[in-house]
Image (cartoon, rainbow, N blue to C red; front, top):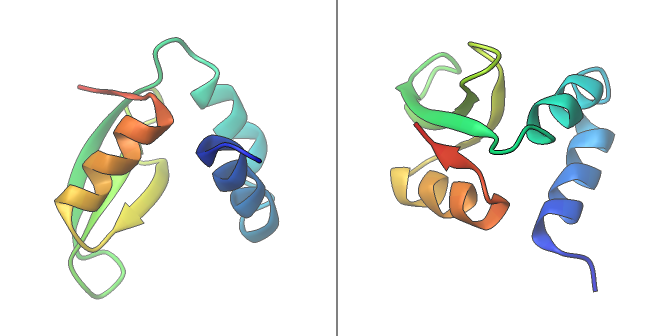
Length: 80
């Protein structure tokens, strides 16, 4: 059975192939540092998990902060 991170990476590779190489580089950092940005850039309020290394690069976005925090934990990222 594939782990959560592998499934997520496969999804990103299919849906955002141009972002995939940078994403791999960012998450290979130990630890991968991220922060949560509450914004309405897409026309509705959401919580984006953003790379601390590459400002403005969203790793994922969620409707609630709880979902964003769960994602960070599952991926093993470090919230800064």
